[in-house]
Amino acid sequence: MAKALISIDYTEDFVADHGKLTAGAPAQAISEAINQVTRLAFDRGDYVFFTIDAHEEGDDFHPESKLFPPHNIIGTSGRNLYGPLADFYAENKDDSRVFWMDKRHYSAFSGTDLDIRLRERRVDTVILTGVLTDICVLHTAIDAYNLGYQIEVVKPAVASIWPENHQFALGHFKNTLGAKLLDENLDEIKKNGEFDLLFQNWQTVSTGDSQWFLDNAFKTDGSGNYGKYSNKQLDDLINKLATTFDVKERQKITKEASQIIIDEGYGTYIVSQANVNVSNNKVENMGNFPIDYYFLKADTKINK
Image: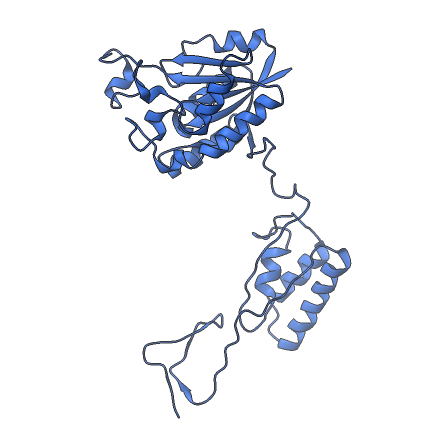
């Protein structure tokens, strides 16, 4: 079975600063990515469909006339593709795998023969790019789901005006429609635990106590345990730290926990002492938090 990249509404009116209904900077920021993934898809043999809003001036019967200002009017430059994507279309518009489709509503399937053409070509997977993530891209994805297509959405090649709507749509693609989220190389974005190497930067409190770090980075349910490492013996030691107050005993537990991590080869550490704070009895009014961060205040002074 084949795949088809659906490029949705990446036009002057939706993207450019002078556009009639522009998403502005967020849409402009994906200009290179949407061009890159379109070329990648085309070069590997996928079909490419440009599905573009085509509105008539003064069409009061269209439901969008009550919702948005006039945009993507037939015969205007607002329907021109934006950025380097326009160059791709100019170079390849006569290729048998490249199509341009006018659409009246949000979805690329609404009122078009997109579904017919995809099925003629034995396409079972659609790759979605364009704007807006939460309107035309989302409605296209929902129709694709209802028509039985596998869905892939290129995360760096979709954009919206509203960040919260953009995030909602990405979650809806994945969690409700079963879509795969792809990166700029058309590879699936990995989930927690599905990668070969993770580089993290951590800061610890100045006392050097390890409980917070171990609890977050190595405990089975730790919020920073992105590799999904799990070791019951280590979990028990970390839990023991939470109820142990003797300093020497805490150090002993920490050494045992560290040895488990070293023996299993889960982490390699590059330690950098970024800051050294020194104080003595000549310093007055030096504030500190319970977690042992120190800070200068307006009335801090050093006596000579």
